[in-house]
Length: 266
Ligand code: SF4
Ligand code: SF4
Ligand SMILES: [Zn+2]
Image 1 (spheres, rainbow, N blue to C red):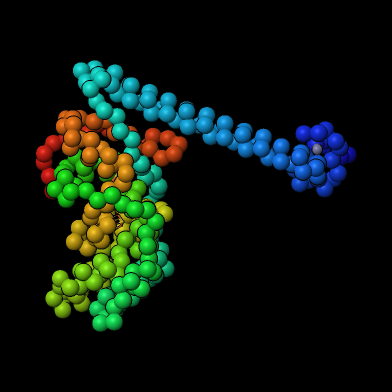
Image 2 (cartoon, helix red, strand yellow):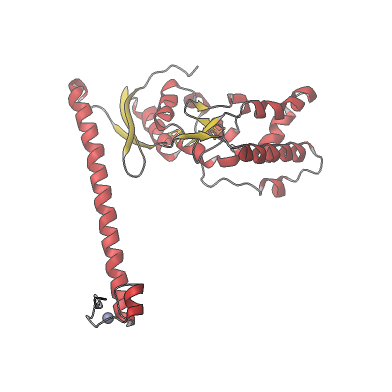
């Protein structure tokens, strides 16, 4: 037997059709009131989730400070994004799509009728990166921050590894004819067997599979808002150590202290 449902707002009995579609009657006031209530409930839930998460971050930080008593109150806390996806096989279809894209770029870039305005429009990356002084970006500790995150920014590289026609044109102009011919093969050879799910094809659990000279300018100079802030703070405050928590929207993925030294990477 069917139990009769009532409108959660006015209490009127619902028709069978209304009962299937939701929990309000056809009255517009009931519908909008119910929607508003639902919206508020969702907001509250989201807020509670965020608060729990912030508490998690704080307790992680406090317990770290507790274990390292001498540093108490001296260690600035920073939060950065984090990659937490598993590696997957790099599909042949994706490889082919990328290699075709690459060939197209090489062809566009080496042609005389290259139209910068038109040809660069075809692939614009979603977020605006922040550029940092090159000398600072090569510091070891800057690399350590990005290692803790594991390349959240690489996810926007997607199928194209941030390689644009403009970049290809610049690259080709620096190469001899033979080197230029080898370029395609080099990109092909460096394609990994496994990539981080939903990221750039060259993004692996060990980092970027491309050597620096094959990476795009964006890859070599990009800093996200969070890491740029750390770099800015540190170059003006000269803190010797910081505590960095890498997290996604819901939980802490990795956390560690970072020692600020003058050493450069590699
Ligand atoms: S720049 Fe930002 S998003 Fe990219 S790897 Fe470094 S910390 Fe992660
Ligand atoms: S080429 Fe390397 S650095 Fe650039 S987006 Fe892909 S994995 Fe990241
Ligand atoms: Zn109603």
